[in-house]
Amino acid sequence: MNWPGSFLAGFVGTLLLTTIEAGAQQLHLTRMSLPYLLGAAITPSRDRAKVIGFFTHLVNGQLFALLYVAIFHATGAVSALRGAVIGLVHSLVVLLVVVPLLPAVHPRMASLHQGPTELRQIEPPGPLALHYGVTTPLTVVVAHVIFGIAIGALYRRDLPLAAMILAGIGLRQFATVIAKRIADNAVTDRAAQLSYYFLFSLFPFLFTLVTLAAYLPVQGAIDELLARLDPLMPQAAMSIIHDQLTALTTQQRPHLLTFGLLLAVWSASRGVDALRTALNLSYDVKESRPWWKVQAIAIVITIATSALMLFAIAGLALGGGVGVWLAGKLHVDQYWALLWSWLRWPITAAGVMLVLALLYYFLPDVKQEWRYITPGSVLATMLWLLLTWGFSFYAETFGSYDKTYGAIGGVIVLMTWLYISGFVFILGGEVNAVLEHASAEGKARGAREAGEAPPPQIERPSVAAPGAAKSAGTAERTRRRLWSRWRKSPA
Image (cartoon, rainbow, N blue to C red; front, side, top):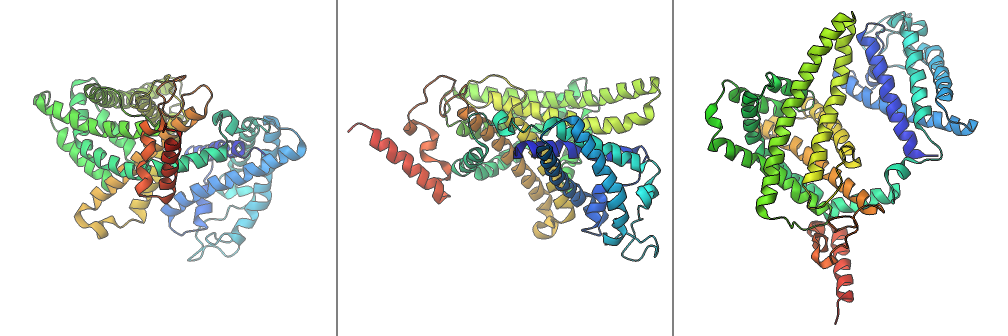
């Protein structure tokens, strides 16, 4: 069985199924929410039930994807049509078997005969879940058929996902190498270092952002940017940024285009420059470019990403306005708000991926081809969106930072969020480096371009790994490198 392929197909299929069900709710076609029903079985809190149910729903999707794949293997064929048939059978089992059993097994669902009680408040679905809407059965069937089509279309028995993405290295070996790189390069420590530099450069970066917004045709971009960040960032951290931006945007400041702006840009570029150092360590190269050049790169990237963010946010706002106008002309404006609310997140992810692709291309001191989509940028984007949203939920629901840290609780939350971001950004660079070093067409570890012989081990940063003082395993690997180098050296 192609395990990575089944997980990928299950993840995509579950996202599609969840999107269809959520869209049907927004269009008032049904009131049933499978993620909420799953979460409510675990916790009585509505907010927590939605989050827990979402992740439980993803796990269930993966398990059912494995079942679909097992059926594919048992029947000897894989196709979208076969997946659709399995999805149809799956939906009938849900409607005819699972739904009638829900009131008996769900701890918070009322009974059809006894009615609601103090603990059981959720309305029972009724036959074929018709109590949640007359079109609920159709919604369930369509969602599961599309789930099956996705599994059948994406899963391939004879083409493992690892062979497509992890060329030249197996999945288990890849995971082992990444774990060793995290330890050897002290990625967690460097993420903590980055969180300080990010915090140091955050407010100068906002200073630069506001100044550019005042002199570029991107009116309203700052407010839209805050709206995009609000669901991802913890409220305590968001309030700090919001207060600072509010203070900066009360009026245009022509005097910012002076020495103050230059100082702000320089300070904001320190976070970018710190990430450059971490990425050089990922590729196991020493910095060879002159000091003025690396500083210029950091400053240019800082300004470019600031302008890119503003124009991207302005483009989102403009696209939304054009979409509303076009939807009105086509008399489908009642559906546009739902469609645009879902489209904005893939667009946001694409923007984050573009910024990461620029960082991974320009910052390390290696020559490489420009690629917008790389395994590292995709992984870092998905992890960043998922982890920041998860941490935001944790900080607002379970965290007690204000009680523990008092007045600086918001700053601690902000630094933790920056730490998570730094760790994910470095991890994406490590993934790109490992895959390129394992590829036959890529660079050797320590080399700056493909086909170039790497310098001797003694001249590379990994000869004395930063994690050697922290981990016994890293220290042992460092000792073996030095011993190997000493044995090869002439007497």
